[in-house]
Length: 373
Image (cartoon, rainbow, N blue to C red; front, side):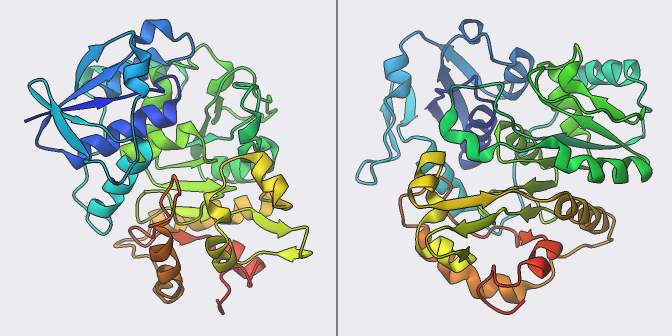
């Protein structure tokens, strides 16, 4: 059976890789045809990543953007309708994400994107040119800034100051890791004097296959909730998500750690707990102005929070037969998330694979869970 899927925002790396990941896992045995626009018409698209992640799909290119965008999340409509020689998945990315969560929560048999032999060899050449040994330990990092898409002011709440990660970067370097900073030339330059720190954002390898290559070969990825974290997510690479405004909501591995900001209510003059965030629908907010309207400030992670969470991440990924601890608090907040799955939220609040929140964060903010930690 052929499944047709309309992919709209191909220049947005997160939507590109995530939507392909979700549709492939929903229909792993079917031939999937992606209907999208010509990547040559999108100057911001990373064409090498586009070529790699669409490799396992058929492609039909069209300039009919109205047709591509005509996707619905109406629950009254069927997901699949007859379309030519197959079926069209007529829903949008929100429903697509929810269908994936409904099917795969608690299931380990997932299709992850892997580099093919040719792509791995291309990346190895870049790696050698940068002076990184074949068996070296790698961590990738990406902190969203406003320079790449300055018009998207409604997403400024996701921006982050990379300087707050310098202490963690220094620690990783001292642990013999290579730290690969990802991004674009508009980003802040870091003055880190070490051959183990590679600022790919300010190199000729930015916006190339190198980004996908280094994430695919990393021990783990550090990042904000932006498009690049979607690459790690869909390649099965453990993630430390800093300033994560949707804790426990993003699909990942059992090693993942979410490090939320502090949600401070100017109206109540205090920090908000996770149950309050869920019940009040704050976790469904995806625009800076809406946070402002609710008089909620997102206080960014400190250097120590990121540093201590990185140490926790290293401990977890090097632990044999690692299992997520503290299921007690996860089980107690789970009913809140289950109730929110039926609400109008893009991420679909859920708890998958027993993801956890940073121990350091919870010890520093003991009221966040709304229950004793």
